[in-house]
Structure formats: C-alpha cells, structure tokens
Length: 262
Length: 261
Image 1 (cartoon, each protein chain N blue to C red):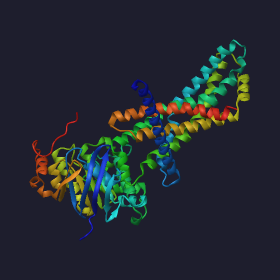
Image 2: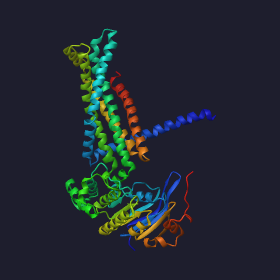
Image 3: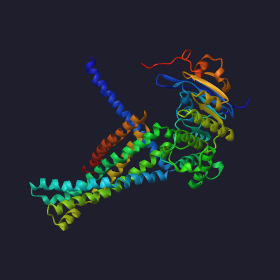
Image 4: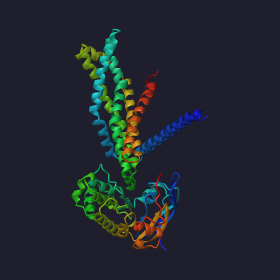
C-alpha cells in the first residue's frame, strides 16, 4: 500500500476554550482531489491553515510524502511547503502589484534550485502572460491592478498565481464563494483542468455542493471539529449519513444543530 | 474589601498588559532585525519605503521646521526683551532646532504620515489574507514587509532632520532679519558661533531612533491587526499614538543620556 500524499493523524486545535479541530485523521492519496465540506466554524479553514503552517496545531501529526512537517526543521518545512499552491477565498492578490507582478511573484517565489536559475523579473512577467492564458484570461490583463478586476477574474488570477510554481499539492479555500453560478462552474472547470495538467493532489473546502461534486473525487465532512464522514464525492447527495444528507440538502431539521450566540 | 482590591487588581492587569505588549514589541523588533543579516534582502521594498518616507515627507517636515524656527525667534525676541538679551536669539534658535525641534517635530510629522500609512497598508494585507498568501508563496512576511521598512525609517528620518535643521535656522534668520531688524551678518556669525557638532550629531542619532520606532510601531500594529476595517483603523490609531508617545519618551531618555552632564 502506497504512502498517502497527505496523512493527518490526531490533529487538534483549540482557541481558548473553543475546540476547533478534535483529533482529525485524514488520508489524501496522491492525485486525489479531496473536498471538505462543513458548516461555518466547523474547522475547515483551520485544517487547511494547519497544513500550510499558518496555524500551529496543539496536537497530532501532518505528514506530506511520509514526512511529518510539524517536527521537521524550519528549512525542511519551507522546502516541503514550497510544493503547495493555495487559492484563497478572496484570492488575496497583492494590491500593491499589477496582475502580472502577482503571478511573477508566485513564479519566482516558488522556484526551486533544481529548476535552474530563478527567472528574471522581466522573464517572469513574460511567463505570467502564458499562465494567464491557461486560466482563460488575455495576457493584457497582466497590466491591470487587482482592484480593477471582477470577483471572477480575481479568482482566476489567484489560481494563476497558485499554479505558477507548478505545485504538486493545491489547496482551494471556498473557490466559488461570491461568484454567480456560471462563473462558479467556470472556476471549477479551471481548477479541474489545472489539477489534472499538473498531476497535483488537491484539497478544496467549500459550502457549494455543485462545486464539491465538480472538483472532487473524494469528500469528507467536518462537524464541530470532528471528521464525521468520508467517501466518494459522487455520493455526497446520497451518502446515507444523516449529517451529510442534512447538510447537502440544506434541511433545517436533523442532527446538525445551529448554535446561536447569546 | 472589593472596593480596596478592585483598583489594585485593575492596576495589576494594566501593568501586566503593558509588560506583555512591551515584550511582544521587543520580540517583534528582534525578529525583524535578525532578517537584516539573513538573505534575501528586499531592496525594492526598502527603496520605495525610503522614497516614501524621506522624499514625500519633505514638504510637511520643511514647512514645520521653517515655521517653528520663525516662531522661536519671534517668541524669544519678546521674552528676552525683558532682560535685554535679544542677541542670544540666534543661539537659542540653532540650539532648539538642532537638539530638539528638528528631530522631534520631524518625527511627529513622519509618525502621522508614514507610521499611519505603514500600519494601514500592512493591516489591510493582514485582514485580506495577503500576509498569509506571502507565507504560502514561501516568502517570510517579516523579512518582506517589516525589515526593509525598519531600515528605511531609520535612514530616512536623519536625512529629513538635516533638512529640518537647515530650514529651522533659516526660518529664525528670516524673521530676525526681516522683522526684528537684526543684521544678516551678525545673525549668521552668532548662529555659527552657537552651532556645535555634538548638537547636530545627537539630533541625528535621535532622528534615527525615532525613525526606527515609527516604522516599528507602524509595522507591529499593522501586522497584528484583526477584525476587518475597524481593526485596521484601530491599529493605525494605536501606531500613531504609540509612536508619538515612545518618541517623546526616548527623546527624554536620549537627552538625559547625552546632555545630563
């Protein structure tokens, strides 16, 4: 049996008295697109941020290609995380740079020594035009600033920046949030294309069931910091799990309770 | 019993909070400084901050220094008139400007202008996930955002203070000659006689410290801002107020260090 690309064991994280992740065990096999669903505050984003090193978990292990990144040296962590690309919910483009510079930044920052010398800024900007075309944008968009773009275009540029360094792991944080259904489908299509072209392993978190089924071939559900279901993404709408069924069909009644803050 | 203990407990909490904040600020500064000796160094960020701080702050610092020098000359003339020592005006102006007004006023102006901008820019990057994006792009945000700004602030403010010193003295000279009837040559001779290298140098040392503090507070509050637009606004206010208070505190400490003898 091969080692999973990403293996998580007993991952826990609490903020004060609030437990956000509670002993998560999750395997993501190489080449799999795993979709993680769950309500707001269920711990999906915290899980991604723990893998990315943006949040330090309280307990557990996170292995990438069999290496625990939580106990690895700092330089080794950086090297491992260099192979991860991330599309943020709001794209998180650098607003002090042009679109082309954003992508060129991703390209140069993710460049590893084994790929040869780091491309010059001019060369990276030139390559940015090609990457823009890969996500369905005209290279002339590169001259614009992020604030001049629509939400859908920002997501495409965010995707372009994420894939610029040709990562073999890609994370997507609610990639279709705030987009109309057609643009959502377009972004999902681009994500699937990019993941396939790069041969990457992907984790996407989303509330959008149509998007989840388009992007993922595996799926998991988080509830109150625990992993309550794992299975095929194709089974999401008919999982046989009461929580998943309630969530995916948007029913008010069921085992999932909405907590209202007093 | 509570009436006695509550104020003491509140005071204790305030002191602990202050100590915690000071410790966090010191650790932040140390981490940022440690990146000065670890490549890469982001020269483009450094140069753009240097230009933003040093060049684009020139008009406001120049005007402040010019008018401050003029006002000191005017006030001194009125005050010294009671003791018939108006001839000391040139010395007072050059002393006040080089030792105190140049660095302090330039520092306060830059704190309001550049410290606020640094805090707002980095704070906005924080609340829009741009700082997290830097990390995911294998770029250390402290190295990229903070270290070049600290260095630029430390270098830019002394440069501004040299200009402020010259214009402050020029403001005093202009009022003294044009309004108060001093002879230009007498005023210049008195100014040169009173001008001491140590005053200028200490003023520049103060400016470097102030520049570092302004950039540090701007970056620190921006980097740690939370909670959207309101959080960025609070961070910006805290950066300017904190920098202004620290600037005045360090002004006293440095004056005591260099001139208490």
